[in-house]
Image: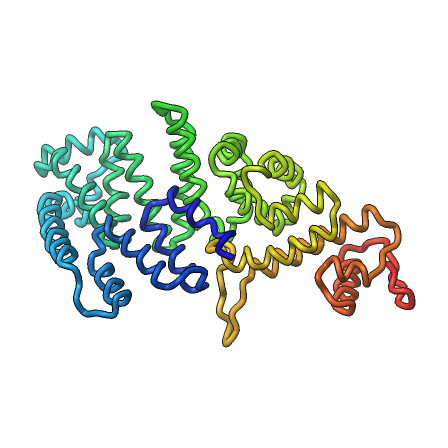
Length: 396
């Protein structure tokens, strides 16, 4: 199933810290050799300040208590740099941690800068040190501290480019802490900035939108309102164009969201049109299921693709989230996906057949006869459909 793994396509569009949850999932699902995952983690960590974590992984990978000298040297360097940044930012951090001092701040950034300079002798050097300290904390894996300092830095920063970097850092930190409500707010703020900003090149704006959509996957598949949110974002013309231009693999997640979201059914036509246009640049069992069913009316093909969809979902870091219930582990999205996918098959089959053999329909739904009969009876009853079940003939 590694052939359906999108990590190689997704990872280049993420901050390296956001790649770690994906690797953890792949390691748990055993899609790759454990040693390969550990080596990938060490490679990622080599560009961060999480040296202790890298040392632990090295010991686990090579079954030794010894670590390379370059890791030891790197740790000394990180500790020294952290101490230096802390000292530079100390005056401003002390001010920000004092509730009475905070009350002196206004919404006017220029006023704040002048007040800090006049009353506390805090200037651009200390404000820049706060940003560097926050960034360093993030690279050390202290996401909570980084989020707080970046939030405070944004209130003082007058450099638009640096402020934009702080927005990205704050969003990454909230995602990594799984603060989904705050992360969604940060995502929406960042989207407003990206859409309103005058970029030096249209390609830069396109890339920012692509990054934003990739980062949003963490939020949309964990937040209660995420299933509608991903549809709103991904189907917005500028973002849909970005998907078709440089990230067609994101169609997997848009397709899944539309399949499980009954209220957004009318927008399925727009997606299917895009899937047809992009079928030569990207396809997987989820997009092929929709094409088989709604373009080709190929029920046998849809049935086969539906079977393959299960493996895709279970082995996708965003779709295959497991929930522990007592001694059992379930994947809620998988169950919703199959319930709605079967409903698609049933509705489409009914539109082109006046009389339906339940045995044949059970085969199309990947169910046995009794399961299919109960499912159809409940569906007819709940939907108040004008249909009659004839048990003796097994016809609807």
